[in-house]
Length: 143
Image 1 (tube, rainbow, N blue to C red):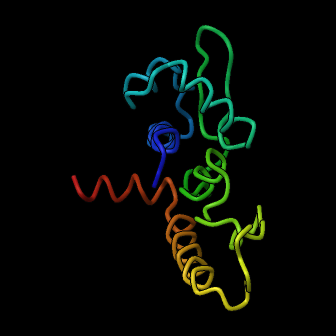
Image 2: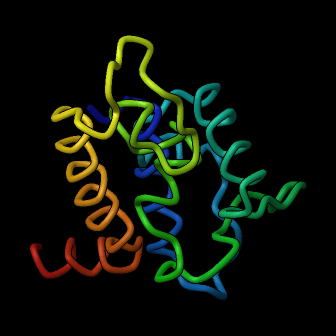
């Protein structure tokens, strides 16, 4: 299940993705209001996204945030992995944080593991194939 933190992060990133590249930075207060995110929570999330290289912050009276790269180069998968970690539902199928399940008798024959590998692969395919740009374009088409 997608956590509230990930939903907030995606909302904030989609707000930034809708801005023109030459637009001034978006103030945190506007992101918080438009995305309906508590400001303190947003500060933490934007800090994580900044450290991961997805947003750039500008200090000062005219400061705020903008995307660090074009919206078509940032996927939902990128954002969710930054906020949550691996997409895998069980540790034995994670590509970045593999850990053998404590109660596993035979990893090679484990039916649960095989099913969860397919879930991980399809989830990653969809999330990595959905960029901020494509999501905002779809919103415009749907409107």
